[in-house]
Length: 207
Image 1: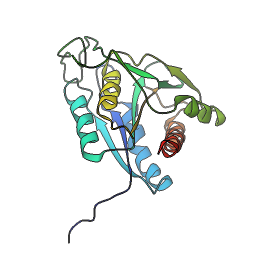
Image 2: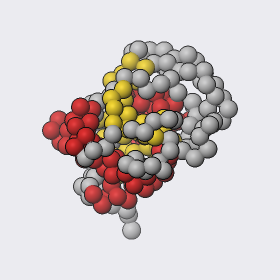
Image 3: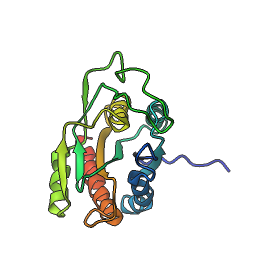
C-alpha cells in the first residue's frame, strides 16, 4: 500500500549533540522530550525533530537538507550556553566563524560562513511577542543580538539563508545545566511549547 503524504505544515526543531566541554548536550535532551508533547499539543502540524552534530561541515548541510525536504513554516533551533540560568532569544546571526574546534576536532574552513551572504541575518520569529509570552508564565528570558561565532550562530545563519519566504526561523539558547527549576528539563520543555505556540500564531497572522 502506498504511504499517504503528510500534507500538514511542517515545524522543524533541532538541538545539538555533544561538543568539547559539553559531553551531554541539554538541547538534545530538550528536543527529544519536546517532540511527542508538541505533536499532541499542535496536531495540525507535522514536527520533524533532529539532533545536529556539532560540526562545522555537517550541521549546515543537514539544515539545508531539512529546508529542502520539508519546506517548513517554522524552524526553531536550540543550543546551550554555559553559566546561564535563563532562556536567551537570539535576534540575529553573523557571517563569521570562530576558530574553535568542533566535535570532530575540526576547525571551520574559513573565517566566514558565506562568501556571498550578508554580514548579518535577522531572526524572523516575533521575539518581542515570544518574550512577552514567556514573561507571562514567569519564565526567565532575555533578548540577545549575539549568537556567538560557533555552531549555534552557523546553524541560525544557514537556516535563515535556506528558509522560504513563508518560513519563520529562530534560535533559543537554553542553560547547559537543566537540573534547577524553573528551567529544569520539564520547565524548559514547557517554555519551548510556549515559544512554539507564539511563533505559530505569528505564522498564521502572516499567512
